[in-house]
Image 1 (cartoon, rainbow, N blue to C red):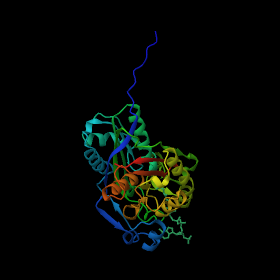
Image 2 (cartoon, rainbow, N blue to C red):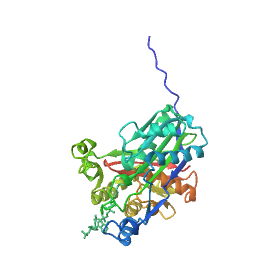
Image 3 (cartoon, rainbow, N blue to C red):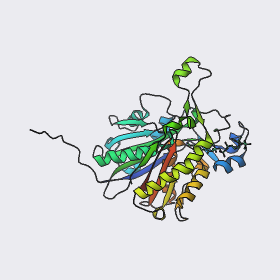
Image 4 (cartoon, protein in one colour):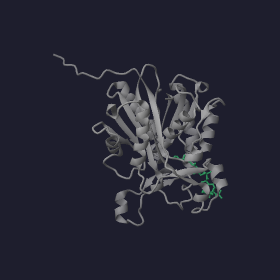
Amino acid sequence: MTVSIKVPTPNAFTRILSVGAYSPSRIVDNDEVCLKIDSNNEWIVERSGIQERRYAAEDESVLDMAVKAAKIAVERAGIDPSEIGVLLLASCTYPYLTPSAAVQVAAQIGAVGIPATDISSACAGFCYGVGMASDIIRSGNAKYALVIGAEKLTDWFLDDDRSIAFLFGDGAGAVIIGPSDTPGIGPTVWGSDGTQTAALGIAPSFIEQRKDPANNVPMLYMQGQTVFRWAITEMARVAKEAVDAAGITVDQLDAFIPHQANNRITDALVRSLKIPEHVHVSRDIVTSGNTSAASIPIAMSRVVSEGSAPSGGLALIIGFGAGLAYAAQVVTLP
Ligand code: UT7
């Protein structure tokens, strides 16, 4: 006799129900950054668009920021934390390999016991999380998902490193994803190129550090031009594929919320995609710097709170970075 296994009842569609963000209070402008590197405000603004960024306090952790953003998203969704069926936390700067940051955030927001895990896809991590969470909910394995991007990049570079010290900031953003009567999250276009690990990452390993603690301190490294060229060519193609996969055209978008890597990368993507004037383009990098996995939810929270695009409007999100990894989808704004 054939025995059939029971499976969850799937949900047809999903959407982002709410977004929350937390940025540390300390504002660091370009003049302050230039006290430690041979650079100037004009160069930084021209090459990256950044005017200032937020630095976490010394005793303020990735977990602290993640919890603050998560609580806002949960409250705005109007759900009880115990209803969260899965928590995915994207970060490349959480300084412990295990246990995950996600299980601790779950505990701190009052959701002890829920499935929770971290995503290691750097600046693409938030969009990886949105795609995975959406598919988990569609499968029926969870009703609500909490997806967080949280980073304390300032722990991982020296303030006198001219190649990157001006670029990065700290912060966290989070969304609640749940079932929907209508499609609210389009297909995820995602991938990676593991031949390009030399372009961006954190090295050496903790094991190498044990051999020479003073000289082998794990730090962020980046071949800026390599990443820049890859982003403006390959990511234009990926973004277009995400729009096509969602069955819409760019002029039907209300917002474009790319990873806040560099305003010149955003400009190039806007040109390649021929994004029309009426589409709001996120430029949160100007005041937040590059916050890796946190940059998209922080920028999305700003779009929603400032009303730059309507609730229910369509936004194209795309994350890209170390891996080199990328993920993009069209979503309905909460
Ligand atoms: O989020 C993860 C993904 N990361 C990214 O997407 C970052 C992608 N890359 C970038 O955003 C850009 O490559 C940077 C903003 C990091 C750098 O801009 P760039 O236009 O690629 O600068 P560059 O490295 O080509 O350097 C151009 C010039 C050089 O001088 P010469 O050789 O032309 O005389 C550098 O020495 O600028 C000089 N330079 C600086 N000058 C003032 C490099 N860093 C600085 C600096 N201040 N901080």
